[in-house]
Length: 251
Image (cartoon, rainbow, N blue to C red; front, top):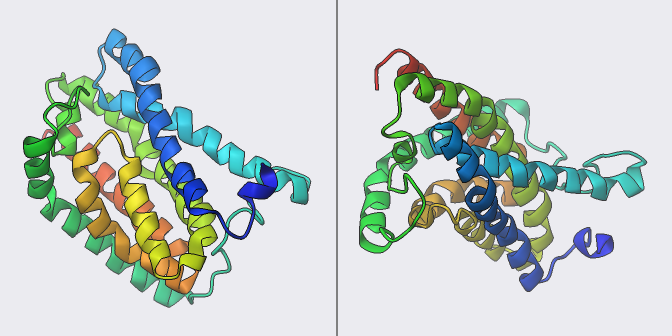
């Protein structure tokens, strides 16, 4: 199994499975573990999704570290992740990441009406509490103090650590191993990563639109820092602004 996972190429069926299985596990962790726990203590259901993501993605990270342990003699990502050679000069990297953060922030917000339309048209049957076109629906209807506490707890997780793990796994581990698909590699990776968010299927189209430029650049330039900067940078920025606005009573 280790040789299969660390091979230079993943077959299409294997790659599809590796992209999507974590999403299935996250939904299961939410449904059977996190949601009952969070409902029992009366906290916003957004916390349940953060817990479910931690329950699945942290073991994924340790799985990657374990894969590297055989060759490195210790838990390591060396040889497991690709696109880590830092070929882009620092100045160009900073400029590119800044542009990508602006792109992701503006486009994701602009596409919220599209998410709402797709949800209202096709996904009102989704049973998850707080499901809706806007991410804030997971926070609606709770006391202000609980909202602030939840956002402070989730900020370092959903704002930075979990997106970072996703980038390690999806762009550092999976994307390089389907590079033989040429331009199909970033397309497939973006689409499957968007579908992996099974808990919000109405956002698949918008995610493909605002994520693809970074995924394409990572594949083209072979530098994972581009998507790490955009993904973790944008989620941290939006989570921080949202938390501060909520704490100050602005929303």
